[in-house]
Amino acid sequence: MNIKIREATLQDLDAIVVLFDTYRLFYNEKSNVEKGKLFLEQRIKNKESVIYVAENEEENLVGFTQLYPLFSSTRMRRMWLLNDLFVDKNFRGLGISKKLIDAAKNLCQKTDACGVSLETEKSNKIGNNLYNKTHFEVDTEHNFYFWTNKQ
Image (cartoon, rainbow, N blue to C red; front, side):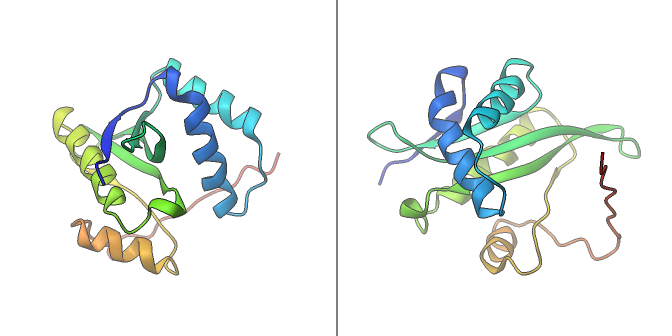
């Protein structure tokens, strides 16, 4: 199967939002296509993230990854947060996730960033296996904390 990886544009919005909503459902969030579309539209228009899509031979979108820019003060360089990675269940096992990760790594190199960061649940065996295979290293030296705004 021939899969093309490319950067998403506003013309892709309707197709991406379907994948995005399915991705959110996977993480036990409620479906909200309208809000998801607005969220993605703002990220693209404001250049607040970079979204790569996987397109099959029929020009249907079958996967995506979304990266957000961050900065490292100690390294004094940009870095990227690979926040979202999703492939339609009918297209899994074909190496599409690896291709999307390669696009993220290429973005890192193209922007002279110091690296790509991501997180996944320890119980996500498929994801953890994928990230090890694509040469991400587990950080066992640091604790990561998160504060939730409950307003």
